Image (cartoon, rainbow, N blue to C red; front, side):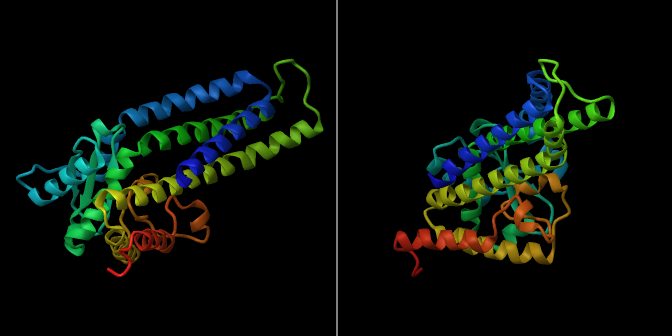
Length: 291
């Protein structure tokens, strides 16, 4: 409930930032154009996200005959989550990780690396798969797309403002000139609004990760299995970061990229220790911590 409310507040903040940027730019027209352009681009990405992601990661669909145990686990967890069984893919990489995609539960896809099946035991792997199925159940692809649309529209507005200033200034819908304060606000928007939008978008992603952890723990009925899996995956991914496009990093259960100095602020994932602590607390409340 808390993470759902947090996601709603963050999306509201993104929307408010977009409205303010539109007003600073000079009226409704530019804001509407930016929203339409961002919406069109992200609608395409959302609609074809599963195909694009699978092609970019090199994941290959496997049949029940090729990976019977993996298929059985996915089928069992999907039934416990109350969604259709997702398609199952494997990435041929030794770095242990996993991700989910698909625009709705009927189009769900769960992908794991070969490495993750080698280092996790059955309970831990079920915890990871439950986390990914939780993303599908919670429609996180849709929510991420909404956040991306608004953040993208804000970036378009900032670009429009910078080009307008470069080629002769701005005017509002009422054709009144902007005052000094108006231009100060526009300069701040150009430099700060896209940064603020990106920070909020990353916060939305982190909120959905916390929610997927909680939902996944309920699906597999063992929060500690997921906690142990996260600990192992974090250690391995620090040692052997995966070679992926940074834009794809938010899909994976743990960040496949190494963090920089502003890691926490701009990371798409919450700190692993915070996620583990929440799962351990969840297990304690359910009387499972001793296990």
